[in-house]
Length: 524
Image (tube, rainbow, N blue to C red; front, side, top):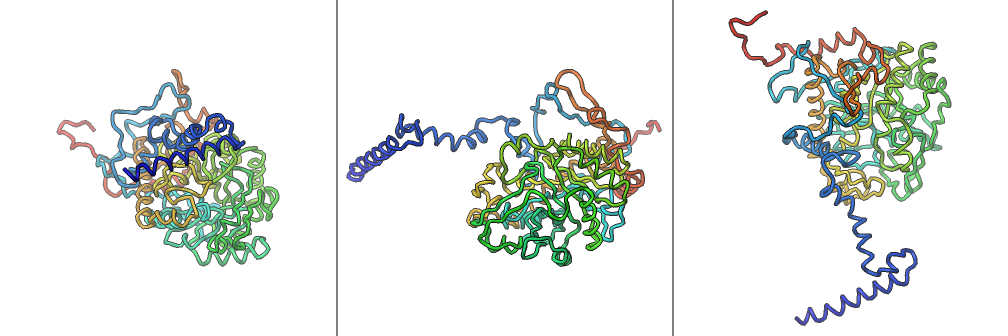
C-alpha cells in the first residue's frame, strides 16, 4: 500500500506535465484543445494498419496482397495445407476484369490423379535464352518462375542470402537488382546481373561504367544473363538516393561507392541516349561477355518500343529478352503518385509491347519475362497466355521468407528483418530455414502452374493460348483474352519448333493421367 500511495502522485504529476506540454505546444490543435486525451487519436492512427490487417479487413479487401493470397503463400512456403474450403468467396460474376481459365474435357495432356503429382516437376522455359541471336552462352532457364530484382541495400543481407539459397534449392534464377552483386548473392543460386543507371558493381572510381570490371565480375560469379534496367513499374523514370547514413562498408564495397556518403542513382543511363545507341551497347555487352542481354522496363509511351522493334528488324541487332514490369509492381520506396498512377498495369503494358514485337515478326526470337504480382497462379497463367515465357516474383518471395506486409520498407524498420539494414532486426531472419521456405513456395507455384496447364489440355504453361482465358465484364458477359487485347490467333505462343521441343522435354516416360482401369466393354 505504501508503494501505491507513492505511485499515485507520481502518475498524476506525469499526466499533469504531459497536459501542460500539450497546452503549450503549437503543432497540433487537437492536443491543445484536448490535452492528453487527444493522444489516443494518434495512437489509434499508429496501430490502425495492424488493426485493419488482423481484425477488420475481409479475406479479399487488403492490398497489395489480400489475406487469402498471403495465406496461400505462407502455407505453401511452410508446406502446410494451402487448400481453401467451402468454395470461393470472390464475387466472381459481378467483378469486372475477373479472369476465368477454361479447362478442357479432352486434351493432349491428362492431369495425374495423385495429390502429390507435380511437387518436384521440372518446368523449364519453352525458349532458349540467347539462341535466336547466337549468344555464346545461350541457355534454357531451368525454371519458368524466377526471383525478381531486389537489391542488397533495399533488402537485408540475411534476406538476400535466404533468397539465393532458396533459388539454388528450387533450381531457379535470382536477379541481383541494381545494387550490385554482394557476398550474399554467392550462396549457390544462379544470377541475372542487373545494370542500373549507376552501374553499381561495375563502375570505376569516377562512377562511370567499366566494361573490364563487369567482365571480371561475371567471370567470378554464376551470372547467366545481363539485364539493363531502364525503369521499374512502381517508380518509372525516377532515380534513387540511399542516404549516406545507410551506406555501410558492406554496401559501399558491393556498389563501388564511398562508405558514409549519399549514394545516388541517376534517372537515365549515361552509356546510351536512344534506341539505336542502346542496341549498340547491348551488342557490345553480349560480344564481350558471351551472355544473353535483355532490358527491363515499365510501359508508358509506346514510341520507344516501336522504334526498338523497327531497329531490331532492320539492323539485325537486338535484345535477347524483355522484362515488362507492371505498374502494380513493388518497390522499397517511391512517391505515392508514381506507385499509384505512373506506368501501365502489367496486362495492358505487356500486351501492347508483345503486339509491337509480333507485328514486326520478332515475338518468337525474344524471351518475354513478366513481373508485377505474377507470383500468384491465376495472374501467372494470364501472363503466360499473353505471351510470357518466364515470370519473376518479388514481394511474393519476400512473403515466403517472412514478410508480413507491414509496408514499412521505406522506414528501415521492417519488423521481420527482410527490408531493413538494421542489424538487430535483420538478425531475426534465419537464412537457412527461410531458404527452405522460399524454395517450397517456388516449387508450389510451379506445381500449380503445371496443374492448370494440364487442366487446359497442354503440357506446359507456356503452351496455354489466349483462347483458354476469358475476362468477365461484371454483368452477364465475357470476352476471350485475345479479343480483349487485340491478339491474332497465333500470338502468345512460342514458335512451332520451340513448342515441339518443350513438349518432348515435358512428356514423362510413363503414361499420363490417373483414370480407372477400363471395363471389358469400354469403347475405343
